[in-house]
Length: 521
Image 1 (cartoon, rainbow, N blue to C red):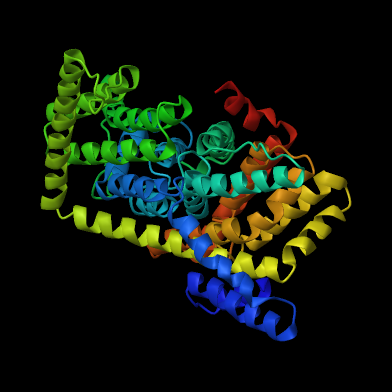
Image 2: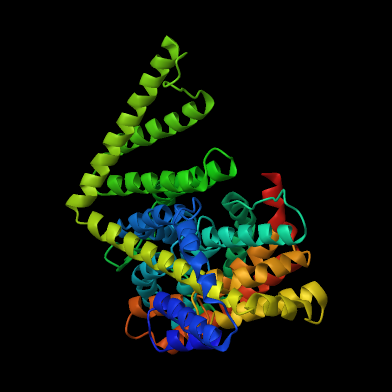
C-alpha cells in the first residue's frame, strides 16, 4: 500500500485522491483474496463525521487565516526591514535578521509556504546584492521559513496533537486503563516551544560562525529592505536610536499577537480554537492599520477586545438566568458595548483590506490551504481503515517489538523511517497515515508522549528541507531570482539539515527541554 501510494504521488496525481484511491483499490484486492471484510468500511462515515466535528481541527482555518492576513498585508516586509537595520553591523547581520524574522513569523503565522515565499521575494535579492554566497543565502531563507512548523502555533502541531492524543488513549486502553488521560493542543504547544527556540539558537550560531570564519560568504552591511525589494543603504551618521525605535514599532505588534495567542492557551484562558480566533482578529486589526485605519482606532479596538476577554473571564455574566440582578444587566451592557466597539474596528479594517483588493485573495488562499489539509485527513481515514483491516496494524506492532535495542531501537527506526518518507511525502500525509500506526506501540514501550511528539515534529520539519521533494525547496525555487539555481538551494540547505538532526539529538539526550514547560504550565 505504501509503495503504491508513493508511486501515485510521484506520478503527479493529486495527493488526497491518491490516498483514497489506493485505499479503495487495496480494499477490493483484500476482499477478493479473502484478507479483508468489506463491511469494515461501514465505519468510514463515522470516521469522516468525527474529523469534521473535531473541535481541535477547527483551529486550523483560523490559524491559516491569521497567517495569510499577515503575509498578504506585507507585515513581513516591515519586520525584515527593521531587523536588517538593527543587525546590519554584525558579521552575517542580514542572515541573523532573516532567522529572527523567520522565528517571529513562525510564531505569528505558522505557515511555511507564506513565510518562505515572502522571505524569497524580499530578503534573498537583498542578500545577493550585499554579496552573500548564493547557496548560504538560499539555505538561511529556506530554513528560517520552516520554523513555522515547530514554533507554535502551527498546523503541524495541531494535527500532531490530535494524532498523539488518539494514540495515547489507544495505548491506555490496551494497558487496561479505562479512565484515560488526553493530550491537549496546549500541551503540545508548550512542549514544542523550547525545542523550537533551540533550533533558532543553532541557526544563529551557525550563521554567525560562518560569517566570522568565511567573511566572503556573508559581508558586513547595513542595507535595509525596502518594500520594493531594493537595497536601502543607511547613511553613516544615521541615528541608531531612530533605527531602534522604528524596529520596536515594527516588532511590538507581532510580538503582542504572539503573546495573546500563546499566552491565552498556555495560561488556560482560552481553548486553542478561541486563541486561533484571537490571532485571526488581531491579524486583521494589524493589517487594517497598515492599510490606512488610524493607529488610535486600531488600538481602541484591541483594548476593547482585550478588556472584554479578561473581564468576562473574571466576572462572567449569565443574563438568561432568572435571578440576574440589575448589576448583572449593567455589566452585561458594558460587555456588549465593548464587543460592539471591537466589531466596528474589525469592520473598518476589513473594509480597508477590501478596498486594497487584499481581502479576496486572503480568503481564497485560506480556503485553498484548509481544503487541502482536510481533504488529506479525510482520505487518510480511508487509508488507515483499510490498512487496519488488512492486518497492517498488528504487523507494524510486531515489527516495533522485534527491533533490536528495545524501546530506543524501535524509536530510532521510526524516526529514520519518517526522515526517509519526508523525501517523498508531505508532513500532513506522514502525520495522518503513518503516525496513527506507530504512535500507540511506541507509547506502550514507555516513551513519554509529549517528548515523542516533539521528536516527531522536529523530524517532520526536516522533511521540508530534504531533496528532491522538500516543499520549502519548491517554494523558494518559485520565488528566487533566476540566477539562483536549484543546485544552489540544495547545497545551501544541506548544513541546516545537519543542524536539524543535531537539534533532534539534543532533545533526545535532554528530554526536559520538551517536558519541563508543559509540567510547569
